[in-house]
Amino acid sequence: MDHFPIFLATSGQRIVLSGGGDAALAKLRLLLKTTAEIHVYSPAPAAEIDLWAARGKLQLHRRSLRSGDVAGAALFYAADEDDALDAETAEIARAEGALVNVVDNLEASAFITPAIVDRDPVTIAIGTEGAAPVLARAIKADLEERLPSTLGTLARIGKGFRKMAEALPFGRARRDFWRDYYFDTGPKAMTAGEAEVRPALDALLDDHLTRTARAGHIAFVGGGPGDPELLTLKARRALDEADVVIYDRLISAEILELARREALMIDVGKEGFGPSTSQETINDLLVQHGLAGAQVVRLKSGDATVFGRLDEEIEAIDAHGIGWHIVPGITSASAAVAAIGQSLTRRGRNASVRFLTGHDMKGFADHDWAALARPNEVAAIYMGKKSARFVQGRLIMHGADRATPVTVIENASRPEQRILETTLNALPDDLTKANMTGPALTFYGLAPRAAAIAATEIPFEEMA
Image (cartoon, one colour):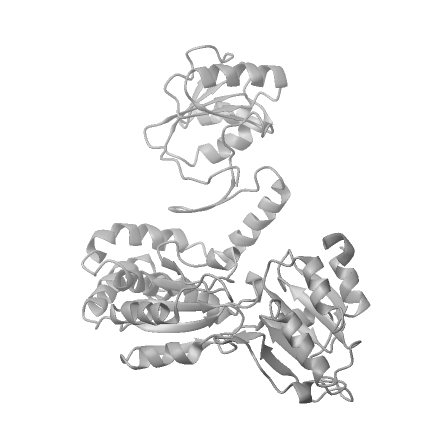
């Protein structure tokens, strides 16, 4: 991001604006929501600015801005709607130490003013870095409809109660209290009137102070193939509540962004035939944080139950009496077969499909190659790039047709997804030419539909 969003403390600060027309009015309607001391410089201000000045909401100077007027100000807005005049006043403001915004001139501005949803003291700022103001306004309108008008009242009352809530231990106990208040107790109390909210808060705090601390728990969460939109709602809730997230190498950055900012993030990436965190270390981390009372998300790529060493981890925490549950995810085979527009099974072709791994702890994995080599068999091969020549050799040795279609999907569901259409005979050589570096899934016995290839819009020859 080119613009880092922050909330500026405005109490006791000076904000200066040069201009008196429509652009100035638009900015002032926002600025007047703050507690800042606002100074406006304009020889011909709009009537509305005159009215605000008469009511003491701002200080109006009926002249053009000049040197010395911006000294000590935190922010300055150049809103004269004249390029030369805006450049002149902006230069004065920069020389006097203020952050400058030139209205409708992103390149000349040190900051931008976002679209704002105001439920004071709850404020939501929406910015598009100047790329799509219409989109920002649409998001604002959507949020205005979704957020109840009472939200600000609940937040204001809650803000005054923060000192009392500090009687609860820092961390999860306190978060659970505030979650109950904002999403259950508070809204219910508001239906009976604002006066009922504070007594409800007192009763809720008494209840939480007498509760037994929640025991540590492990959620084994399937993170899907990488597209954050393919996460289940249950997986997103688990990430939002986690104190600790222990994640695999293939989890995308976009999914990790969904975890709470305060959560401890631990990378335990494994790579076939490459650098890896040992399974014993992962087990120890799960036990350590579970026994410490943390709510832990063990975030695995795809579905946690498919080639994910899940049983070993469950056995480790079971031995220490730590609770757990599994949140299913979309496995890579489901995302990859969708990418090529095919079905894993088809009447008259194959009534079953095999999920295979290209290698295991001992090296290349062995399977029932004779059964797989029969016509019309379909298999989804996980971790199959490095074992491609081994798989090819075993299948051909057992009589598989060299012309059997094979499709390799790299980064299934992600923006950088690539599809390689080949045959069993050409598989190793085509994979070498493609130089695929991302996670890939191999379909033996399936070719992509033409429409699916066209949808990628980039011919394989250009990507290889």
